Length: 498
RNA sequence: GCUCCGAUAGCUCAAUGGUAGAGCAGCUGACUCUUAAUCAGUAGGUUGUAGGUUCGAGUCCUACUCGGAGCACCA
Image (cartoon, rainbow, N blue to C red):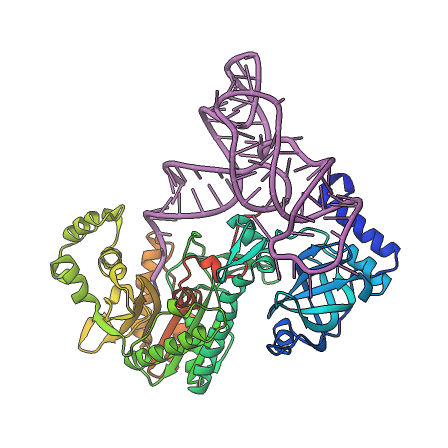
């Protein structure tokens, strides 16, 4: 990019950079000997005292009020921000010259002694200023003012498109955006701690897979050049984790990305984080207990995150409510759903506004009806249990009623939080389920999977009875933080290229 | 994929079909405890792209691009 293509602001910044270099200042430093985070530095000056220790802080210059031979600025780091006071008489001439070239956004090191200003604000009185990185592009800083204890922004960076595309700028300018991501890290750490303490082993399984399965979704397809074969990005971890159960790791979990080639909206990103865990010798009732404890642990971790609005984190009362799939759908319909003919189901689905209802298979119809009549009405965490076998190709038949499976989903806030079952470990039954899926696929259902012969071979070697759970981490965090858009819990959400 | 809304200076926004503007950021200057600092001056634009209507288009029409909200899809 040459200067003719740059806007005036960018030209000015480069001119400033050139002046610094010409005067012998290195505008991009290698390191800085920081002694305190801004929050720790502030804590060093007790109430009532006006001067304190020497500190060295570093961070981004987020405000600057120059009064000629003095100036006030705020330096922001991960812990918050602290005011710095610059006075010409207190600084070497060379550094005052550097100060005069400072711009909002520059990364600086400020060394000096703590003091309290006339207005009571803890401030570093700068005796040594170090430029650590020059900003060549202005950040869209907001002006802020504290009014009645609440911070007001007077302008800023509000275009959602630009904020997601330039997340780095969004984060730099809006420190509160970081809170959900601190909460996210604490939540996954708490989940790992919970599972680790339960004796689960964290493992990693292939993202690139020759066959995809474990869920109903359209995959991303790629190609391996050396092998000259298509590969799919996984849509679920399930089938590989259960291979590990066969191998004798009897409690395993994975937290990783799944990829589904679907639309993007408030609750869907094409790559998202999935937790799956599998436990030998456990059935779905055991897994319900695990899920309850895990959600409570996740919630506590989110609550403990500084900056989180604890009022908005849902309270959990265990055990969660449990309702059965068939009776709750029948109640919603006013008829016994299993006794209804296909035509009656189609009519009911049409009444619910399901499009192309007459094109849908019977299980798909029931699923649609369940979603609109039951799922959306669930607010408090509720386990829906015992799904029809047609909807659950990887779940064991329910003891005493083979038309159903030992499966549960956890719903809260109208959304699915977890999906789990007593895992099907009968290879003959599993082959029949795969073949039914393969027929659906051949009939044009592009979300149905095929027959995974290698997985069947693994089952033939014998898989212990196993309970398994999948939990969408992004959506769990959305629920726990009251976030309305998945983009606000994913640092770099998928966007069309600029 | 569908419907509606939007795109104007680095950022946030104005502008009856009639000379494209403000605040912040920037630049120049004044100011040695300010905090949306203040004051004076100054610069900054192919109004998302391509067509069309019109004497004249930021404004009206068409298509496209990108985004937002909603719907559909999505266990």
